[in-house]
Structures are given as structure tokens and as C-alpha cells.
Image (cartoon, rainbow, N blue to C red; front, side, top):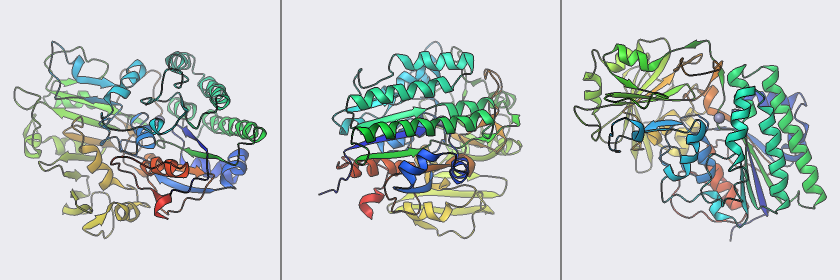
Length: 476
Ligand SMILES: [Zn+2]
């Protein structure tokens, strides 16, 4: 029998919250409610998010226990080579930026059961993924896009977070037993100002005030002690000094490249689908058809020059990964080349040329998923081998995956206002996220995909079906 000290769970996703910023604010006493109602009663870990470290796909692991790759949602934008190519590339292309976000529920792999489906009275506020929520349980089904549009036009993102708290109160009044709330202000102020700007830090402080009010309210109802609080984030953010237009670089190499928002084009033979904007899936048409994936050698032979070498010659690009014919990954950086393969007990990792592409020290060749996480956790690329394997497993992933160097991103045009901060890459500043729970976290190293089974077991539920996450609560 699973021990279930909590009758309900509230999951707060402070979109784009950096682990170090939250720790610094806690130390400075600037997040008193988080300290009092969560940390003093529980625990903190820096956790590793899922790649691509981007809004939308990186929310999914918390709610499904599956990585973006396993969920078939491998980016905030992607291209589906299995879809018929009509007069334009419209039906093959997907973006969850703006109204396209509504497609996420239907795009999620069909047999995945969301956390909402385990509870009697689930509710979601500004959630990207809503499968398992009815129209009344999705508290912001109709309002979400209006709020996001208003905030985009006015720059007043705090208004969205303030609205989120009003929906939280309503859900609590309706006696919800699982509530997922997304707070977009930290992410948006970071993008349009800086991850460390006054506006961004104010958004963290405002989150804390809302949390304090909610905790007092639950306390008055006698429901504070049996409510599980989980506070985390989907990615960090870093300051962006230089934009690199990936699609136009591919065109310079001889491709005719499809990209957002210009998907009503015809006859493209490459697609650049950027997430965050620090990563991109690149898809290449093999001969006359999109149906078949090019092999690694074929990828390198397309275009006017070796695509991998050409990408790595660009200052903006840090890592390039290509899927092998047997679902493995070859990854290049300027340091060297490594090959990653899934094995029965985890993964294998071998440096093939030069030095370790991630700058890792000595690494075991064979590792369990847990060993792969702890061996890489405190490096510049935490969990990169596991994350690359997972994302490349999706049929909607690119033939080439590009991770931008810190300080750079991969889109210029069609980003208004200009992005001053980015995420999406495999770098630790994007992959490390904060994790606060008002309960013990009995593991040293945690992935955000592990929170799904933890939230379920702490509320007395058992996971059904195969997931990527490990239940660190049950394991302890
Ligand atoms: Zn985000």
C-alpha cells in the first residue's frame, strides 16, 4: 500500500525560473512564503529539466512522466515528415507559440495518461497540456490566449500571473485535488529584459506573495498540512547578445529552408524548427520524398558542403547531434565527437574522435539512467547523453539537432519585441531548474520527469503504464 500523507497536490510551474536566482532570493529572505510554507517543511534540490529546455515541451514531463521525445512533442516547433506534403508545408508543420498551443493535447502520444486523469477533481491554470481536463476543469481554456495576447501587446506579464492566482482561488474553492498552475511572467520578463532584471526579480517576489496568500487561505480551511506543494520550473534562461538566423545559413549552404512563420511555402527541402530559441530541429528531404530519413552519412553529403562541419564552424553553434540508423546519437562539438546508444540497462557513451564533446572527465562506457544523471549533473551539460537519446527517439525530431552556444540564439526575424534572453539548449544554465517541495526529496539528483510519479505516490496513486520517470519517493 502506498503511503499517502497528502490529500491534494498543487504544482506551481514558475516558467523560466533559474535555480540560482531562486536560491539567492531565498538566502536574502526575499521569498518568505516559499521559505516558510515549503522549504521549512520540506526540501530543495536543483533538478534537471528535459531537453529541449523550452516552454511547452519541458512542461510535459511533469504532467506525463514522459520526456518530450517519448511524448512525441519534441519541440515548441516541429515538422512531421510522415504527413503528406500538400500544396504547402502547412500540414507538416507545428508551432505551439500562440493559438497553435491548442494542438498539444491531440499531438501528445495517444496512449499517454496525463496526471489529470488520475485525480477526481483536477484543474489546470494556463496549462499548455490539458488532456484529461474537462472544459470546466481547464480553468483558463477560453481566457488563456486573450491574457497572453494582452500581455504580449502591453508587456504587462505580471497581469497574467495575477490572474493565475484568481483562478487558483476558484479551483481551491471547488475542492480540487490536483492543480497545475503555470506562471509565465518570469520567463517573459527575462526574454524581453534580462533573466536578472528588476522586472524579472519582481515577478519571483510576486509569485511568493501569491503563494503566501494561498497558504494562509488553505490554513483557514484546515487544509494546509495535507496539501502537497511542488514548485519548479521548465528551464533556466541566459542573456542573449547575438542572434544567428539558422534558416538563412542553411539557405546559404544550398538548401531551400522552411521556417516559422513562413510555412505556407512550397517546395522546401529543409526545415528549421527552433525552440526557445537556443535549440533547433533541422529536417532534410531525401531525394524526392520526406517519408524516409536520411542516414548520418547522407546528412553530411547533402547541401554544398558537410552540414555538420559547416554548422560547427559558426560561433553561435555549440553542439550538433545526428541520429544514427539504429536510434543512437552522434554528437559533435569543437572538442570532439561521441556516440550514445540506448542499452538494456541504460545507455552507452563512447568518445569517438578527439576529446569529450561535452568536456566530461572519465565516464563509464555503460551507465544506468541514474548513473548517467549523477555522473554529469555538476558539469556544463547535465544529463546530455540521456536527454539527446530521448529526444531523438521521436519520429517528429529532426535529422540534425542544433544546440546554441550560451549568449547566442537561432532566430532574428519575426521575433518582436527582440529576445534578450534564451533557453532551449543543453547548457546547464538552461537545464538546471529549482525544485522545492513541502516534503522530503529522498534523492540527490532528480529529473523533472521524476516529479510525475513522486506527486502521484505522495497522494496515494500508482502509476499505470510505462513512463520515463523514476519514483524517488517509492525508491526511498
Ligand atoms: Zn518556459
